[in-house]
Length: 285
Image (cartoon, rainbow, N blue to C red; front, side):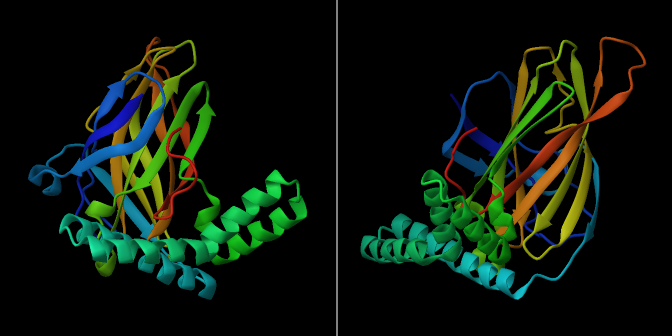
């Protein structure tokens, strides 16, 4: 089993920047196996924050207005994030009575929170084959929190190149009261084709819960342009700051076959996945 381990992160915690220097961040490795998010920590070096990590990127952004239901969900999400942060602070300061009080508040919140309630109802309805009810609950969920229909993981294959992603909310690096939410994600790229490939460039489409979309392009990943041989995989970890408690990411990698001179590059899809403080039922690929 591969754990996330240490992630190096570049960020200025500004989720609304239209143009930025965005060096690749994280740690890469070759291998395979199940990935778990149960234990990890995140650090950021001064050089990366100053933009010295290498790999120039460019970005563009657009936005749209959220619905009233989505705005209500944003407020609840912020409350949830604040409670989790307060419990962590109380625990670290050994104020266990306060930590217990906040824990009980969190449990009550989780029982009554509409998104979590509807997720439970959908799961129960599907298990009992009440598919009409499941469809009704899904439509309600789509109305109040469109991003929550996405899993915090995705899996897509293009021309034999499989890309798996898993995201997780990092409480210790987030500041909900200031609108700073920090998410880490781990990617596994597996070459199931018969030809070696090299990853040349990355393209991300990042959308927050307000509908603001940012396109980010960069050279390689985490300062590398890895070569992935047939039947092998490459894994790396990175992170994304948002100004909202929920969002989504998707994109593609530009790759080329390196066993033949003059091979044309091609794009490998990264299927959409959620960035959510509520997470989902899975903690691994």
